[in-house]
Each structure stands twice: as C-alpha cells, then as structure tokens.
Image 1 (cartoon, helix red, strand yellow):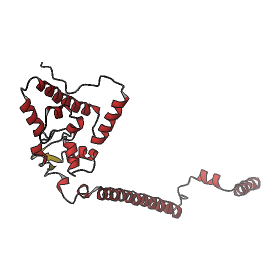
Image 2: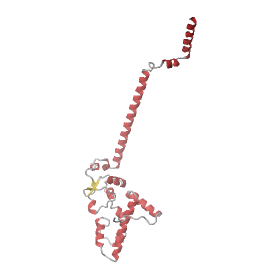
Image 3: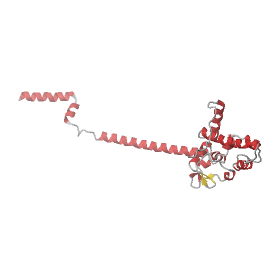
Image 4: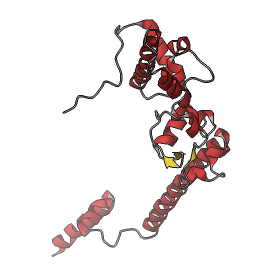
Amino acid sequence: MKQQKPTYSKPAKKYDKARITEEAKLVRLYGLKNKRELWKAKHVISGFRNAARKFFTDQTGKDELFAKLAREGIMKGEFTVDDVLSLKVNDLLERRLQTLVYRQGLAHSMEQARQVITHGHVTVNGRRVSVPGYRVNVAEEKTITYSPGSVLSDPEHPLRKGPKVEEEAKTETVSEVKADKKSEESEKVKEERGATVKVAENPKAENINPEVEEKNQPADVNAEEKSESVVEEESE
C-alpha cells in the first residue's frame, strides 16, 4: 500500500502563546473549522517557499511555479523569488471558496458562507462544490454563483436581501409558532372548563352506593333513624 504524503505538520512548540493567539485570530477571521485547516494552508505555503529557495542555485521549474502561483491568484502582477519567499498564510486563505463566497456578497459572514457551501448551494464553473477549502483559481473566480436548483437562487429569498430581512423572517416564523402554541393551550383550557361545567350540571348522585350515601349523611339524621328503629322493636 502506497504511503500518503502528509498534508500538514503540527507546530514544533506545542505551547507557544504568541502562535496560539495568532492562529486563534486567523481561525475566527476566516471562519475555519479547526486549526488543522490552518496548518494545511501553512504546509502549502511552506512548500512554495522551499521550492523558491532552490531557484537561487537552480532555475529549473521556476516558470512552472510562477505560472501556478499566478493561475491560482496567490501572486498577482510581476513578482520575483523574494516575493514568493515572503508569502503569508493569509495569501492562500484568501483563495479559499469560503472566503470568496463571502467577499462576493453571496453570504453575510464567513460562518454563513461555510454553511451555504457545505449544504450544496454554490457552484463553481457550472459544477457544485461543497468543500469550503476548495482553492479557486483566477479563471473560476467569476463563475462562483448559487446553484440553479438551490432555494437561494431565488432573488426574493431573505438571505439575498440582507441580514435584517433574514432576521425579520426568522422572528415572523418564531411568532407564528408561539401563536400556534397559544391557540392550542387556549383550546385545551376551554375543553377542561367545559368538562367541569358538565360535571356540575350532572352530579353522580345516581351512581352513589347506598352504604356510602348513608355514611355521607349528617350525624343527626342517622341518630333519628336509629331511635325510630328502637321504638318500633319495643312496641313489638
């Protein structure tokens, strides 16, 4: 089985406060899922730098590397080997599909851009792409749009009109749910009240056991009945 090449390398110093703070900022800024995505981008940038360092002694492959950097939009205009060596991880993170969807206004935040992509609402060059970390080249950048079969392709969708309209739509949905719950509760209360009224109009006196009825009678009535029975026995 062929061994796969590593796609990223972990930091040498595990507990470096400056590095941890910087990485946390980049993760929040670009809406990354975890630091592993950031380490992958750093690994790619490190590969470009290592290739550029060899050009000081050997120019083989220089044109191919420069063409690749220009094609992917990582480097723009005329640049030299020193420019490649000064590349930062931000230069690569700006070419992610997630970042470009947000920059082009197809989403209102980096987090929302990630959600839109993973749910299959975005197409690149006519094909659906659901990977937020997909590196978009210059030719594909202008072809980023909503998928034709997506609900977001409708211009009247709340997400297309802005965050305020989307928030209003959410509040309307919540208010409708609350209204439905209140109506259900009121109907239950009405049913309970109707049941109590029926019980009050039709007491269960007919079904009461005679022994229980006798026990429920007042004490003086029971005493009178007992005395009458005693008098009848004496008269006999």
